[in-house]
Image (cartoon, rainbow, N blue to C red; front, side, top):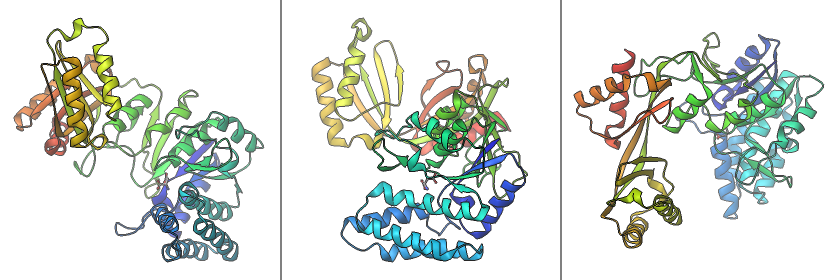
Length: 432
Ligand code: ASP
């Protein structure tokens, strides 16, 4: 059987609901649908989830959420009317949600209602059974999936019927509604795929798969036909954002393949994400900006066991958690997200580091980016040399390189202002 998850753009209006139904009905193996809240109908539009967060913000200021909620209500009513669904039932559900938001049920409750209402409508439209995620999906306080979820959901679907499950939310072990991080319906879909022991998890969105480079930077970038779980995580880590990287964990043990598909082009095969791939060579390049770089040096540093660990502990005290590390014999470069610490925090941190560790020097720089070239068996692949040569020819400064620590990724640190051009230059050098 197939679990299919439909993202917000696939449910933005009644036309999209119709496409979803046609997709589901074109393959009888599709028996569980996980749905997001309606997304943007065009670039000027608002996502229902964003508006629900606004409603909650108004309620927190003791103001009625009505002005924003009315816009939400009219979108759902428009869909229900066009699809000839039961509008009076929907109106009652909308009233209840609005009153609960105004009564201060909180952020997660408000945000979750987009998926809840979408699920109610889709269940009615397909004539499928609605499953309430708060009764089966358990989310830990740190936002991770509690494994209890798989068993609870498996029990609810054990009669092998047809089900619609709203994405993005579940409940804490105490039964209080809780959401995943943004884009979290991908995680709900993965939980459903695991609970149902699905043969395939289809993730329907508005692009025809994962691209070898961000198409906003390289408009003619190719779609990746096949990629491994590890490679997806590595590409997401450096900015590729088609699929929520935390959605890999639930399906990895059972090795359920994931197929990214396009609701607006259902014949396109999309991208298959699976456990292993025979393919070697480069499959994608991506870059993520917004990093700061901390550089420090001390002669004979690595003669002192535990020093690196002690420095990291101090960084943590100042809220700095490095994402990437580069080591030399007497020096370290750590990249961390710039939003983690402002200039005055970093200045005090540097003073402490200097004093406590008697460093030769330590300083930080803003506006860095990390570029990842992702592929298979990269330890046997020298295309990163081609990539570096292309960057040099384009006059792009390379700040750091990490080749060989991961079979799946070569990392290249560049200045933020060069990141997009670097992606394009490397794509042209390696893929054209
Ligand atoms: N509706 C939620 C969001 O906008 C979750 C999702 O679409 O996956 O983040």
